[in-house]
Length: 564
Image (cartoon, rainbow, N blue to C red; front, side, top):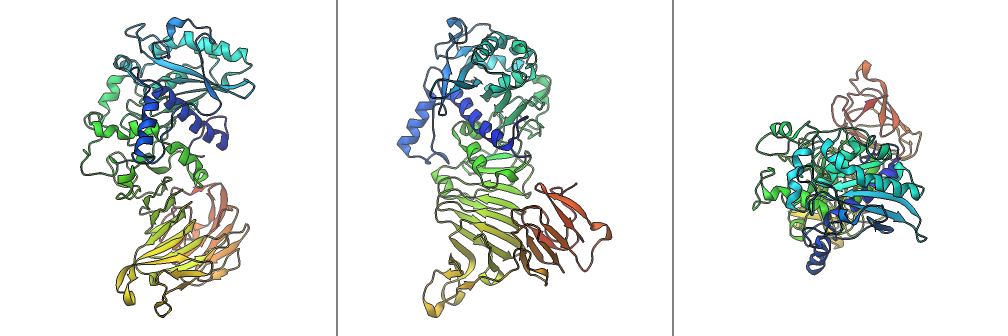
């Protein structure tokens, strides 16, 4: 099941909706705040400083192409429901009709002829002090749901007039707006005569989590607000559940993505920032505020590894400004806001020059654009450098590794208890072995079609590395100790005869691999799922490494492999 999975939609449609809903939610959040055009101000600041100065992406504002605001009059609603900032307002359960109370925008997607295909109810987050007074009603939700009814009835009528049904609606919001989207999801069978029961609900950075299959909550685990009050029955019980003084307890929910990390300056443990993840620490709000202008969701969806991500996958996304990108290595680190350091992870770079590194397990690293440096160590890793001139860095010396050229153009590097498969990489650098007679650090190679070319290009000091031949496309049958077999074609069968072997089965998951070892368990034979396909295994105690799994060394069957 892909990372962003929405009930009733396939992977592609779910991914598009995740990106679109985030754009709609953040537009409603920043269009105006306290009377100021916050979104445009942020864009202007980004343009003055230069894109990428403060964040890992160019800041944008405004609606996605083809979307427009729907006025209150189009919805048949009185002008009295529109506040001074142009938002449609709901009554405050506590204060009643107040200026800049709970707000929303109704948005419509239309073609060049004006035909409307989708409508969104996008709730605004906290953008005025008056919003705070209603926080105590979030967990119950029923008081707020009552105030939604008149507006939602108008939206339902508008959609019906345009030949649309409930599943053509996107209900979203950021922060407090995400909580309101969860409340509408909870009462969707009651509001507007149940018109929105089949709508698509996506809360972004929501403090409230409604545990149901009709809503998806997207946020970052290092955001102190995401999941803040969770699914507790009331605010009091939510606050009692905190591990510390208003610290996010990093709970997991079935309707929430719980292991996304926005790798910002706070998460990098910059020494000048306070480490506490308490909601009372202003620095801890970095991921919450940064998430408004971040394109992290879009980058995740565009990753070549996206279809391998599940809802519980660890995904670390670079969100450093120019200064941070120059000194901090982006990866899954030990943090008070996480409990997964050392597990397999996806590391996502930016369009700028990034420093990216793997963890202790099997990782997927994508650099995107920019001249990236990507450091790998142990485990089985897959790397996509992307555009730019990217360098892959390894521990030890070149003599510690064997280098392979795959039929699909990628490079395979085996050694130091690791197997790395990399595409879009222009250079490889080893930690030691450079300088005169290998006495210095940093030996770097340029990847050529048939070898690694030593950048120190004097023939009498030539240290080029030829690619090692390895069985591919099922050609190998049995191979000897410490060899690597690379199988990129379907229906290939290979068998490893001893420990320290490694097998790459490529992108076709109907391959069959049979492993035998000197000491195998009789009970070790079986069929196990591997990213949607099947693989026959024998002798699970064989010390083999598999790209795309968590299996390496003498291990028991990892959780990533599920019996079918």
